Length: 100
Image (cartoon, rainbow, N blue to C red; front, side):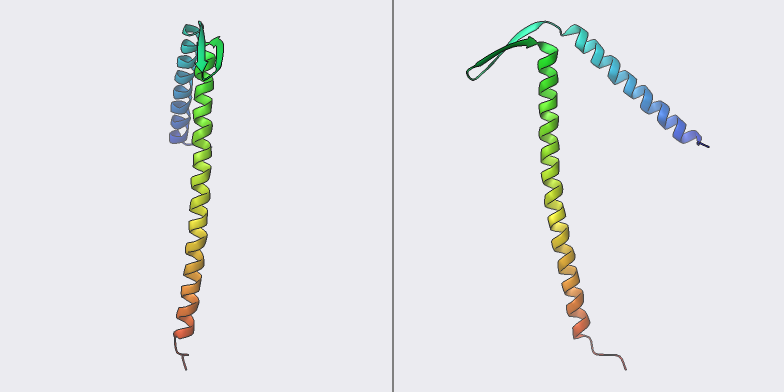
């Protein structure tokens, strides 16, 4: 059985998703004209919305790669900190006198 809060959250998420989809459709329909992209030696003619979508995807991919690099860095730091914690705990145990 679902609670009222979760169904309200689903409804809010659904409304937000629908609004984003509507905005995306409107942008697509209004930006169909062909444009020429000049990049270094290349010259490409494509629809504006296609170029916008490719730029969006390239940016999303770049952010994803940077995020993966950051996650790997944090995992290495976490392993190092855990190793240091275990070593310190081992040293602390060996310096304590036995309890009789």
